[in-house]
Image (cartoon, rainbow, N blue to C red):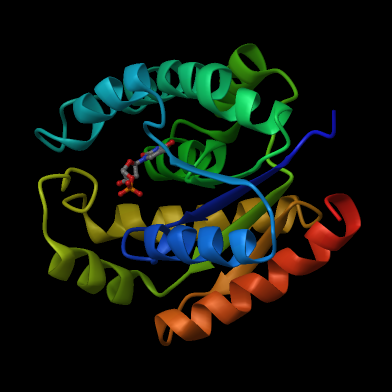
Length: 212
Ligand code: TMP
């Protein structure tokens, strides 16, 4: 059986990933592909329960290592129960956040360091990685403005100081520089439509080469 394609969307707060994940879903389905859209933290019942622990409560509820362990526990469940079965049945999986969020938020943002995140990833996921990662990039202040206007209960990360958000934007850009074959940085400024066009332009060549 042809294995599907694993695409992840990444970026800081208010970068527009969730909206773009929905739009990409529609675009890929219109092209005739079967698509599973999912998210992290979450994407399986066990991982969604862990999500609540991560995104609510006091800013200093967990330290960086504890967060990383919770995230990898959730990710393990999500990969085994949702992502791999969908890929095995030939679906394109579009995931709103994945391992690069842990590298950016915990590794760079909380100063856990690249090596620790890489070690955990090796232990929990082995060689499993996205085929394509789209990093939605936006100036920190613009992203936070968008995120605050969105409101909601899941504010714990939005409430972290601005220096944290700068570390994680720089982290995402550094990840992209280190893995240019897998990662594309997408300018997330402008209208939803503008960003959707940029994303589609990044995805189509990869579809053509691997997924017909
Ligand atoms: P979301 O707002 O994109 O749904 O993500 C929820 C929060 O979880 C977001 O503020 C970033 C954070 N997060 C991490 O800190 N590390 C991770 O590995 C993931 C997947 C999310």
